[in-house]
Length: 332
Image (cartoon, rainbow, N blue to C red; front, side):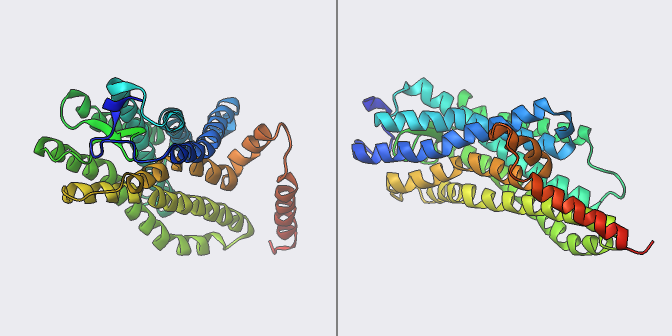
């Protein structure tokens, strides 16, 4: 084991060998599907031009970020827990902390971008100006730039990356009470957690306020009803993504701020590890949500995963027949 790689708030391994193996298995159960599903989203989008729509650009960007998190933080957590310690040394800790933070914050910013996209499509706050490809590309570029800007400082002395939890993964150092480090953590929390969260909440609130009246207008005709049904499905997808965002990331951010505001508090390493793993588990939720609820992705991703089988094709054909029959009996 790398004795110098132990987390700064304890002097010996906090878990038994069995405990570390259990954590390795848990992370493997999340990491394997995350790699498979996010890779599927990226591959089928590259294969099928029909998937290259503004909203799907953001979904693919999230898949890229989540895949990066799974390939770095997920895989390394599995390996390190299986070994019972962090075995990559100080440089490895810094690089893992930087990579996981870069991908993680990019993913959070992309959730905010998706919430904004839905709000613009449904609420039309700027009139008939629609959310187009250039807006999606601009938002994606901004999400990576924003994340890179705020994750680079620890590489140059403002803040630092350090072992966290049970000592098998690295992240920004929430425990260091040096004012120089605390100032970075507070700024990091404000711009990388609070700002995306505020955008998500504001967009979601506006969406939920507008959606009932928008659906009522769309239901004025059969075709509009079909559109309304589609918009409701997309809105449901965004709601689920926001909820998984809260469930996955809020415990981690809340614990970090609690430690920063109470520097003398002693957190059990295992307790500190649960929010970390919960945040990393978010990499598998999002692709499940939008493969299941986004008909475009589902049409191509499910056959790709099942080697050509299409279990939902009958359901979709039935829906199409229902719409056609309704159109035939509706008055002109």
